[in-house]
Image (cartoon, rainbow, N blue to C red; front, side):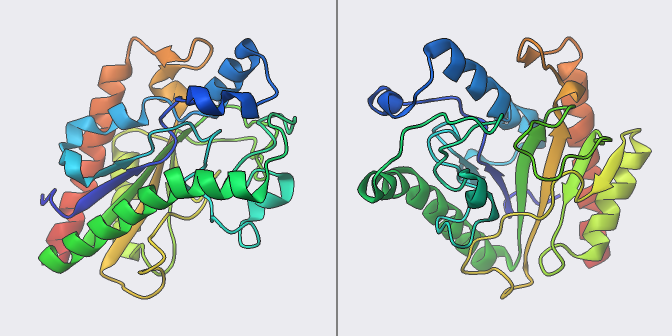
Length: 260
């Protein structure tokens, strides 16, 4: 399997809140730590390490999504979550509680320029370079979610599968979708498509324009590999990680063989 044309996009694994931005938040240290734990996609930068994707092909946010959410549109008029004040810069939190003071447009713009823009510029540049070199890029958008939905979630499904594959009609070929679903089923996972979360992130430059830029979102239910009460890895985390990565590798290898 060619790993050089695979990019990992990991936007929510960091818990870092820079000291100089701490004063924006209205929560106590205990409250903000708890909120950060609830909203972080814990260990997703660790989860796919066995795939051996080159470090240079990994785009990982350096800050918590409570600072800037890299998965949102940077224009609130385009972002559905902005309607509940959880657009690119959050004012509300997981319980729909107010977590941040009102920021000025200058403050919001500064956050986007410092964190959001460099993140997406890197993703676009890597997509362009791999696309030009190999003729195809596959972007894996890596996330996790709690077993029980948090109040802010708009799609509050009662049954949440162990694995959610997020797809889009243009950038996720049906053959790739089928390879992923079939591989996870064979590995014994509960899997669903676009449930409880849908879609996948593709750089704007290529969105609905270039079919050789492929992508899918991989969402793993957190109890599969971690202790959700303690926010730590579980005893079976290594086995779960290896099983997930072997399944993804098998799916991609099968898809590549169908492309030849």
